[in-house]
Amino acid sequence: MSVAPAGWKHIETTSCLLLIAIIMTILRIRSRRRVRLAVAADDWSLWIALGLVFVIYIEGLIWVLYGGIGKHNVDLSPAERTALLKGYVVCFLTFPVTFVATKLSILLLYVRIFPVIRIRIACIVVGLLVSAQGFTLIIIVCFQCRPFSYIWNKTIPGGVCLPLQPVFYGTVIPTILLAAIVVFVPMPVIWNLHMKMAQRLALLAIFASGVLVCVAGALRMSSIHGFKTKDLSYAIAPAAMLVIVEPCLAVICVCLPTIAPALQDIASYSTIEYLKMICRIKTAVAPQRSPSTERAEIYTPVDRSGEKIYGHRCGVSPDLESQLQEDDEEEEARQREGSQRSLEEIPEKAVMVRGRWASV
Image (cartoon, rainbow, N blue to C red; front, side, top):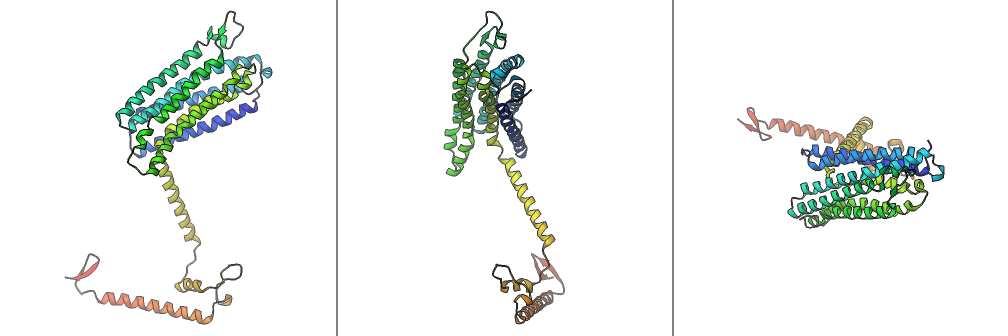
C-alpha cells in the first residue's frame, strides 16, 4: 500500500486544516462559557458540520490509502480502481451535507447576532437555497449512473453515466455563488453600525473571511478539467483534496467571529504568567543594593566597549565615595527625625480618623 507524493500532500494539508478547525471550535465553546451564553442552534449546526468534516476526512484518508489518489492509472491494481470510484461516490455524497450544515450554522449565527428583520428574511431565503443546492448535489451523484453500481463496475451490461465534467460545472458554480451570498448577507448592516471606521473594517474583515471558502470552491472548479482524461486517479487529486479543504475552511470561518473572549483570556493569562516569571527571576538574581550604590552607578564611568566600571579601583574616586556615604547618613538622620516628630505630634488620647490622629 504505497502512497503517491500527491497523496501525502493530501494527507498533510487536510490534517493541518482539520486540527485548526477543531482548535477553533474549542475556542468557540470556551468563548460561550466565558460570556455565559447557552448553546444555540448555530452551535449545534456547527458541531454537526465538524463531525461531518471528520467523517469526510477519514473517507479522504481511505481514498488516498486504498484508492490510489495521486497515482497514474496504469499503476493501479483492479482493487484500487474500484476503491477509487467508490471513494468518489462516498466523498461526494458527504460533501453536500457538510456544505449545508456549515452554511446553516453561519446563517443561524447572523440571525442571533443581528436582530434585524431584513437579515432574518435574507437568512431564511439563502438557507432554503443552500438546502436545495445540497439536495440537488446528492440527487446528481445518486442518479449519475444507471444502475448506480455502474459508477465503479463498468462491466455491467447496459450501464450508462452522465458526463462528469458538465455535471460538476453545473453544481460547483451555484455552490460558489451561494457561498459568496452567505458572506455578503451581513455586510450592509455591519457597515451602518455606529462604530469607528477601524472597528467596522475589522468586523468586515472577520465576516469576510468566508471568501476563503469561495476561493477553495473556485480552485476545485478549475481542477474539474482533469475529469475528462483517462488518468482519473492522477487528475482527481486536487479536487479530492479541495473537497475536504473547503468544509474545513468553512468551519474555521464560522468560528472566527465568536472566539474573541477566549483569545482575550489566553492573551491575559500569557501576559500575567510572563510578568510573574520575570518578577521571580529578578527577585532571585537581583543583589541587595544600598542607596549609595544606586547613586554611584549614575556617576560610574564606562570603558570603550560600553561596559560600566564599578568600584574604587575601577574609576570611582575616594572623595565621591565619602560624599555618597555622608549623603546616606544624612538621609537616614532625616528619616529618624521625621518619625520622632510624627510620634510627638500624636495626642495622649487620640483615635485614627481618615488616616489622621485626632484628640478624643
